[in-house]
Image (cartoon, rainbow, N blue to C red):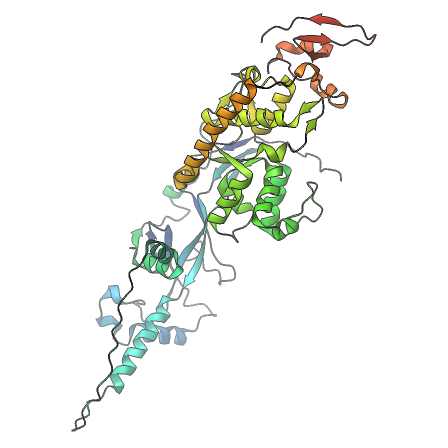
Length: 490
């Protein structure tokens, strides 16, 4: 399949000024044009935890689609006929007609969206904290039902005089059982308890600014990136991650995945196998992204158990185990699979201690050819040209470490034990690397990579096609003659 040609390239800037509190509120479609653009906002209220807003919007009672008689009847059912004599705070419709509609927001978490402003061929993006859908609230109907039941009860409670005594009623006394800690946590996670606690939260009145006001214009200007950095880290997006994210959002499934497993097949697998197959392609991922991409059908604890069976924790992120990546006994060039596993584990251990590592330090310990070390590093990190170090590919997931400290502690203990085993195995290793050279079909690509460093100092040597033989670097020639060159430390 041919790729679409690039029509135009424009610079993209990331603004962080409003990233901590920017929320997009969506109004329901087909609601008669009831939105802040053409309706007056009577009142705006907000809840801090959970973050919710409540908007009271004025309804157009002069519209041909509005029934004035029905609106007055609803107001009477809710507030009664004596609404004008009541406390204004207890009255829902002060004008004795249903002239307003209340909307309450419902937030959706774990959605990675941003808003963009295109200005003078520059795209300025600002990450969103969340996206909230404004839904109409019909609490006034509950008030109407409660009032009608109360009036009906008052009409039926007549005072009958007579000698008939009231029949005795049986009283049942119930004693509550002592609640265990596990039961208490389960009850606190239940929908009824969360709804009850949410109802107890106080609504605080807030100011609403129309988009035509000066205050809105000032806030809108913050969507533009003020400080522009000339150099930014390259954003690498794996094809599988992109396709998976798009497929899960639009509901379509990739039945002919180039990675060998379609999303429909993944959904049918056990959870552990799903996590394993996904990490085989993604290599490393944050826990929140993993649960989002694989769907929320399973509990968080089930995801935790599954990911610990197939991955290891590095800086709060999960990286697929080396046993899964290198499952062959021998790799091209005669490199044993066990050595590749140990080398990768050692590199991962170094990343648990620091954001960056150096290839020279790794090579001194693992004794692998520089090309193979670079191959492992490119999978897990990216090169920082200024310092010539390799930086871990993902940002440290501190939220996961704070949320699951027991998991992080267990993983840290395992890494320390693993480190001792790795150092001991490297010391006692009897593997002869004198014959380890890149295979023929890969030698051409290796020729353009560094033998001893990640900078451009080895350009001349790479063009001549050196290969490692024991303690020396041997230069290959077309006439089968060779000359030994003493290697120099980079």
